[in-house]
Amino acid sequence: MLIETQNAKRLAIYFFYDRRGVVDGYVPYFLNDLKKNVSEIMIVCNGKLDIAGKEKLEQYGKVLVRENKGFDVWAYKTALETYGWDKLEEFDEVIMLNNTIMGPVYELSETFEKMDQKDLDFWGLTEYFKIKGDPFGYSPYGYLPDHIQSHWIACRRPLVSSKEFHDYWENMSMIEDYAQAVGKHESIFTKTFADMGYKWGVSVEMEDLRNYSGYPLMMCPKKLIKERRCPIFKKRSFFHMESDFLKNTTGEQTSELFDYLRYETNYDVNMIWDTLLPNYHQFDLVKNMNLVYILPTNQYNRELLEEQTKENKVALVMHLFFEDLLEESYHYVASMPQNSDIYLTTDTEKKKEAIEKVFAKLPCNKLEVRVIQNRGRDVSSLLVGVKDVIMQYDIVCFAHDKKTAQVKPGTMGASFAYKCFENTLSNKMYVANVINTFVNNPRMGILSPPEPNHGAFYPTIGFEWGPNFDITRKLARELGIRVPMNAVAPPVAPLGTMFWFRPKALKPLFDKDWDYKDFPPEPNKIDGTLLHAVERVYPFAAQQAGYYPAIGMTDKFAAIEYNNLRFYLRDFNNIVVNQGIGPYHDDMICAVNQVLVQRGSIKAALKFRMKQKLRRILPEKLYKKCAKKWKRMRGFETEE
Image (tube, rainbow, N blue to C red; front, side, top):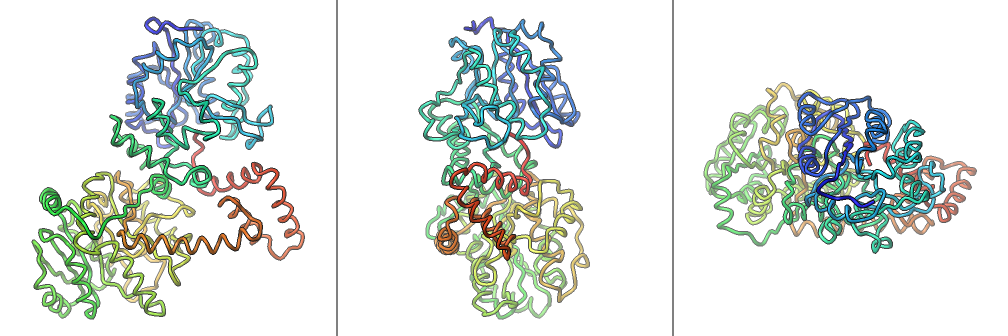
């Protein structure tokens, strides 16, 4: 069936879900364009919807709020039943789409005009290519066939008015989970009706990518948008499982997508941040968007720095406790721009005099040394000691002198301090580039050095929370922080308590009326205290305020970090792969975990060896088992 674009009568059934019941800006933006191309829009919301959100959606059509059951499949079924077949058959086209897609990057009229010229019974925007085997266990075909992705399926009158279409929806069983949503609907809808003789297609030409990627919209979205004028992209691109990305790419796909949208299109990427930050874990966002900034230590733009520090008030807050480290501390403080303000805190008048003597020659706009109580260490220096002035500034660096005397040999602790300082206040050129990075990335709220991973600190990667998750979550709730936080996904936190930040990004922390007595008296135990909760809550405070956390490194230290991590990974691979485990990272993790859990049992060892052989024959089944467990542990939402 061909459609006459100018006179087409179209119904769009738009499925909406948000765990908070909030309608973020990307939804009205999308519906504004969609409304220009359809006759009616019906919006079906699963779960809750706040008053402001309902008012926004009602500008585009009738809004139906239903219980959060059946995923998008039963939302579509409910909408179809609400209209009734007689009414639905009056439309030339009925489009079922959902808010798992964002855009449009190009006006949707372009897509409609293109597809109206094609003699089809149903069509979509993008295609998912055939998968051997059935990872979800519901396919009547024993595999997942080529299919239109269910975020947009447009059905024309011949299909909508058919008995087959009516039967398909009337006999649709309840969808209990994401696996059923894919296995019982999305992956079989296309083949079901194609086998009956109905013609289908997609607007984005993809056939030549069949051997390039089974899921082009996820694995190479920039290619589809830039080269094939795909009008949409997946929200999931920004929080999808890293293991799946790294099976298919080197991890560039999402940051390439974001940069293209930001610099090469008119799409406002703030709409992406506005929906990601309240809803998804920061660790996934930082990994998928590669929010790690490697900055030069040997070049900067002096004129640009002067301009930026005139427009943005910059300060350093540093707590100094060890008199024997004053000269070393001066070296790092001297990296700040000359027109910045410097606040140094210490715990005695005697130390204050020593500090003023050493720092008397420091070139800066303002130098102030404050005596604070010796309770709360460096944390109270920031949250209490300078609270009266901190919100006057746009960009602030926070640091403290550091010995880490609890680990031996001393070089181990000294290297931890080196890692913190070098990636915070390495030299004037690095600091200038940090400031420039904040100016150029207005949604970045906190920039931290990478976590320690040498010597006794090696297990920090994988155990970033330590014994501090419960106390951090408790503190977050007290501060009104509601962004996602779980014990499996680590915080993107400054685990040396040195970092750069925007004071307004840490407003949830500064809004609390902190007092020295809130912190444990000295000496206190190393871990599990409020001090370590604050250290880990910093990035969540920024996320709550609408800013993202990021990692910052000097160009010199990035080389050190790369070689260290490569050494660790190479050792792991040498052992595991030589035992016949692999080749994929998640296969290795699942297999090693099985061995460790079941070790000591001959029966378990034999069972493991058999599974390793079967894995080479039936890789999807083992992958399915491990992937489902990983997703469940990570707390991913069941969203397409």
